[in-house]
Image: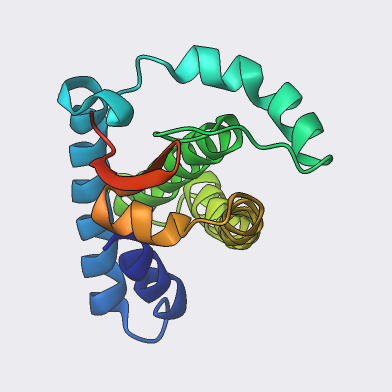
Length: 168
């Protein structure tokens, strides 16, 4: 839903301002939910292991160059870094977008410039994220997009493969 709302918000400014604003407020709501879920949610959705995975990101990317990905039930270190970058950019973009329609911040240059810059920075990050998902899916021979949508990932245990919820 977040991806769809970001796409709607990205293509509607100055053309369909009401829809753009509605998408922005919905994005703020989903971001608020994600922040709460990052504290109270299931094991792999919590932010608890954020620091460990972020510190592992350079080594993970170095090994990825050699085709070695490792197996993760939750996000891999690169996915964790991308999640953080996208969440922070979305928070700043949505917050500055909401600020623009208030009396206090309407027409303030830094609010408008920050909203525009973060909105434009999202696009290359989204493209990089999708490319990373495709690359790691091919290297690991598993459908990571399906795992993101369903919350389930195939676990390889010996000769059998079982479907296990990501949050176990």
